[in-house]
Length: 623
Image (cartoon, rainbow, N blue to C red; front, side, top):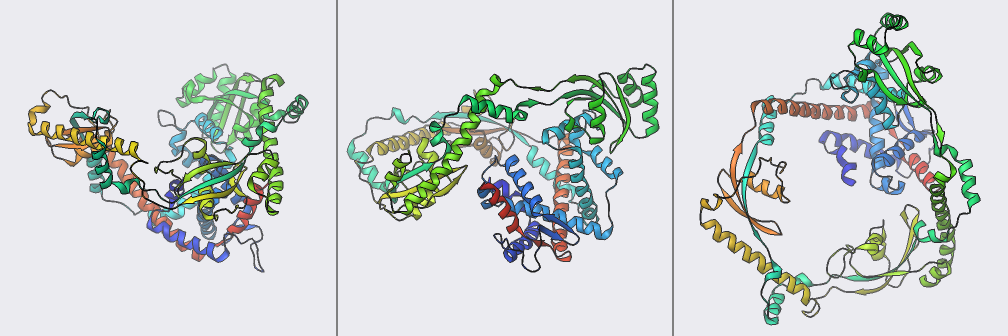
């Protein structure tokens, strides 16, 4: 997750822009919620004549958090840098809008239409814009046409400004061709395997094991360890206490029936014309008895699939078309109606009436939802009594017992969350150790002290009491004998398998006479059906034709020989180098655009007030 949040800040020029933004965060303070004498009012971002409210930024933050990061807690998302990333992106858009206002640059309907027609996601198999695909894509993304067009306007304005300084950024085509040749080259390999069998090693005398242990004793030393007693308060721990009466379920069903309702949908066909005259001529042809699909084919060359936009709800279609479509009868011709896309004719084929699920069908679902909601309420009720009790000096076990909970203890955990053997804890103990701030609190709380109540996110809280601590020490042979035996046998098995492979390799190239080559594969291992594809591919592409090398995979020893080198075809190189050129040129253009953003930050006096957004977000998350 951290990686995905950082991907937008890798280029050097983007770092310049982010440094400027970071300066803003430092000046105004990420936690600053005061406006001061010359404060921003309710604005979180201000640049020239343009501004963005704190509420708009908070809404965008919450949308991204839920849609792209599996609804991690608001606090964690802010800590991971999501708020900074959202503000940075919105600040860049605001800067370009401010510059567009200064230069009187506008987005026209023609520009919108051109931009839409170029979107690959909205094109059919022939590369032609399909309004059906467009509407389905918006529906899946949860966007209305108006909301999408507003976003598109901002992109168009930004692109017009950025293009003026970045159009000349081009990488030499030779670079792209070399990249393509390098990436597209394929090779085949011949592989001979030798198994590693630690279970088949001969019995070992204790004297041998002890000697081997003495030489490797540091590998078995323990790190500093603690025993951690903890009390976990979460909806799951309190769920068994919640009972929901039938009348509560019935009442919830009556009050929240909309959550279980299915909206009316209509199956629609639609065709689009550039001019009102063309649309009217099509309407006249249909009114004269020509089939709707036949007219679309004759006048526009469209098929039945091209004009089919599927079953849509009222909110799925353009606001101008929605009333007409949902007031029409089956078979009724609609239009011509003008929208941003052109002049529309539509016909309703089927009406799918809305419906509500019966109470019995959703009773279980409602009961589960009510139990979870009540369990969350119980969490916060218990928190108050737990904090009050801890404040009076009560011991952790007493607090737990008084609240119908129990404490548990994790024995021997190090500062990385591993056990005495250096392995991660599994099961419920591993889940607890992975809670936000649990491990840090376990080691920052003094031995024998009780921590404060710590928020773990997702309405879960914990209290920690370190009860015992052991210093780092050497372990005796008797303590780790079974581990020593397993490690000793594994090392001997590896040595034995390697020796067999070396003897085999000395025979010469004839050892591969009966070994079939693999299918051709690329540097990444794609095309090679083997669990160790990447390791084999790395070795094969590092050595010349007919060379062979011994490699260890962990489970076996392999001899791998480069059997064949297959250069990319001219067509492959041409097609792929064109793609690389596009990507390299786009990257260059993006870097220049980011440099322009940094310059506009100064000329439009960019002001950031992230503290206001954080106050909104954390205030909402506490409710």
